[in-house]
Amino acid sequence: MITSYLHNGIFQTKKVKDLNSIISDIHKNKDLIVDVPILALIEILDKLGKSFITNKKLRKIEGSNFLALWLKRKNLIDMIDINLSDIKYLDEFVEIKENQYIKAQPRGLVAHWIAGNVPTLGIFSLVQSILCKNLNILRIPEKSVDTVIPILKELNSIKIKHNNKKYNGSDIVKSLSVIYYPKDNIKANEILSKNADAKLIWGGKESVKQIKNLPAKEHCEDIIFGPKYSFGVFDKEFLESEDIAKELSQAVMDIIVFDQSACSSPQVLFFEKNNKYNIKQIADLIKKEFNTTAKRYPKNNQDYDTAARIINARGEYLLDENKDIVLAKALDWTVLINRDICLEGPIQSRTIFIKEINSINDIVPLITKKIQTVGIAIKDLEKTKVFCSRVTYRGVARCVKFGSMNNYESPWDGMLALSRLVRFVKIKR
Image (cartoon, rainbow, N blue to C red; front, side, top):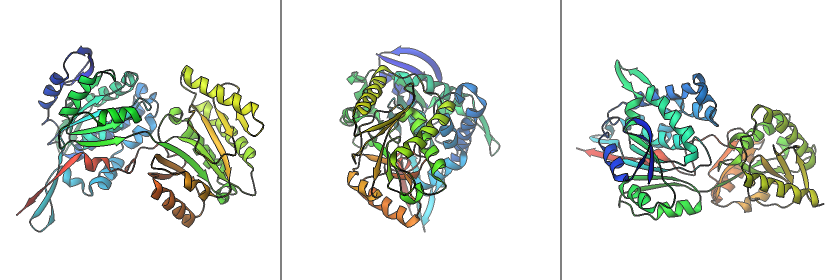
């Protein structure tokens, strides 16, 4: 059985036996946004972003600040330029050489399998496909419904005027459906996969493998955002500079946002040996930042399994004389200190491992293609370039300043997703 939350422009929670009927109905609305100018679509989405300021319910959504900034007109235009090189491709045939023209047509029906680690993930995934004027079906986790549906209801209410013509967010909403079904519903998975012209897959190793291996159209484009790992690094010069307190504050913010459940959240921080702070003194600085920042961003309800992981780690570190720990009285945050130069298994929920290294280059051998984001606080530009060149060669997708590790941007996981959500077609005369 399939649960439908949004279909044919109607927000209604109901049980549906046949996914084929949803797919059939959504194709009837395929022309609603294909002729909408891309700048009108962007204006609608920009207005949606502004709603996170005016709508109290949306403002309470975890990560709403990031989503509001991401939906800004300038950011969306920049993203399209990075992905497609010319925003005009989405509206018209553009002459690239004499008597040669290129246009970006929609892929068609895009199926999204959304992971549950970040509440707003479904919206980030969906907006990229909307910008390419595709039809969309989101299969979201049940726990994401209370985040995704209110945002889409707000989108449904938006009206704009662009070049003296009216455009409605409701037309975008009619071109998509939001559903849920259990992972073991193989039949629903197969039907969705067989009908998709592109598949956007977010999830863990087993989920990705299962969805990737489903029967699909020969031309179907698989865009996979699988499990990743992220960490941060501070070099000696930065630690000895006046900027260290501000940078640690930004790193703590990266830890707090999404409680480290995002692939881009840091799980370990490496600190180059310096003449100003030893590793325990750095831990005390982090403690100060946690105490300040955590008051503004109280922790969400914590599940039993995560609490158990934190308690077990605390017990281990308290009993081992070769390890150290700095912790809050409750389970609000934990700093774990050891000498092993490795990437620790994530505990999450504001639990960070910190380690002292002789050189930032000591961590280069740890890099694999599983590493997504490295937060960097490296003072010298040339040193930054050399380090980032080495780690990105081995697999890292992003090297970014602290405070922006969780900012969704393009490229992501080494991919320009929008360029894969369109078909480039050509006229040659």
